Image 1 (cartoon, rainbow, N blue to C red):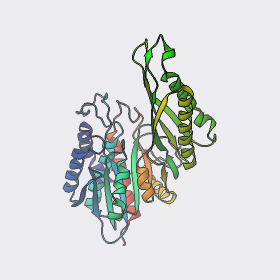
Image 2 (cartoon, helix red, strand yellow):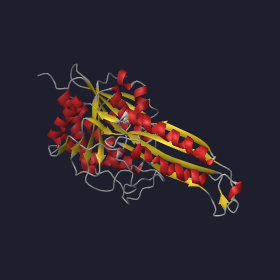
Image 3 (cartoon, rainbow, N blue to C red):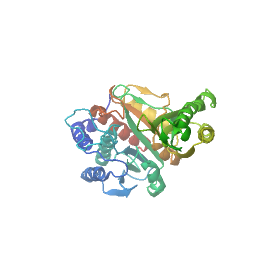
Length: 386
């Protein structure tokens, strides 16, 4: 693989950065120490135009090239997940209940590697906006950064991101134009009946039969209300009720997620879930409180920018997939792609435990590849005039 030689020289340094970040995971918007580490490295590289506190702990740093030219945004997410780590690695998380199980420590490292190279060489026109984002796993730090005006404030014209993929061989890059990942909505449902002694169900209003009926009926939304050629997932993932064999509980709690691509399908799914809950609650005589929250929109790559990113990837790695199968997972980079044209790509790190697994660990060998992709993308999009 033609990794940029100068970036290959950073490999051990990048490993040190990545493993420091892995040992010290932070959650959601509270990535303050991670951001401080990023800022310290950026200053070491000679980057001085650094903006902190965006979306609470996000960072945007500007690297100026030689002369006038476009402004391209490169994004990395920084937050970890609320999980205990089971890798047994020497660099395992030192914070109980928190771990980098989705490779964001690697994403931050790849962007830092690209930043060091770009700051050293300045072999491009215009500017690069380095976007270090918190809260991808929770409330959408990408949305908050867009709402706080980073695109306008820094004149960002296009934006790109990489995500590690432990289901692909090391160095394979994959993407596609159009929908790449789904929209995600979540729902929570509280059913209230009348509890009592299980020997006297006639004196109670049991929420459990209603909960079971709703759980079954939800599966008819993708199976019977959706065009078979459209994509929709409705997953009931939490059912909590009851405490003893001789007690009919007063309440039941259900929660789940809905994934879709098409806006019409998304609207239909919400409508049908609301209708099912209301109808079953009436049928069983319980009170239902449904909280349905629309979260990340679908991640939709722009065709021209995706084709450009694929052409750059082919200069960096031997295997590039330009028609990757869409995923029902979700990404808050979707908000940045709604605000500006760009592309999101997967970078294979070699097969192993998948993201969000307690034994997942980013492969440090992938970091120089990702950093080389980012660097070459900037040099290709913003070439110096000779």
